[in-house]
Image (cartoon, rainbow, N blue to C red; front, side, top):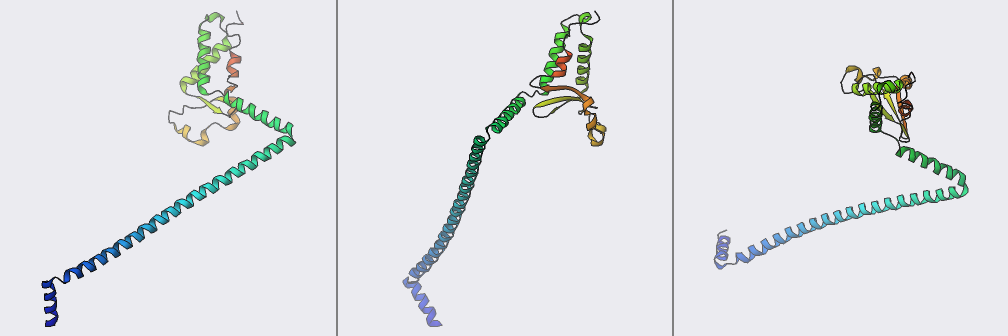
Length: 215
């Protein structure tokens, strides 16, 4: 034991332990760096593989979708060649539905038409006004002020109908579905029908609005 301590002290004095320390420390650092490099490379490789897999899946899905659409187009072309009348009928029907949908009037259109009609009837004297036209406009304006008019769109045409209560009041009866108007009574609640950018009942009421039958 004494000899070992003397050897160690001798090595310290002569500087022989410094190369050994450097050697072991360098080996330790090299091992650590190698392990870190291996882990980093594994992570990079796995992320690259995931990216490659995702790109491959997206590419495959796009190719399958494109192939399906191509098959549908081919089938449609074959169907059109075999049954041209049926194809023409379907195309015409779809075109008409699209046209009607584009010209489906909204609630703003109805309100604008009502205001224009009120403006037109106010420009003439009361004695020559048509009572039916005047009473209809008064009724519509009263319903608007009370917030009772609703619009329901069927896609190609719209319906203005009369509700029981103003939805903005927050009444109990407006929030309970059992107290809402029944479907069977909707026909009696229809105020106007909008089709092809025209409100037909309003226009019919305004025919001869400047003619008083009693005069």
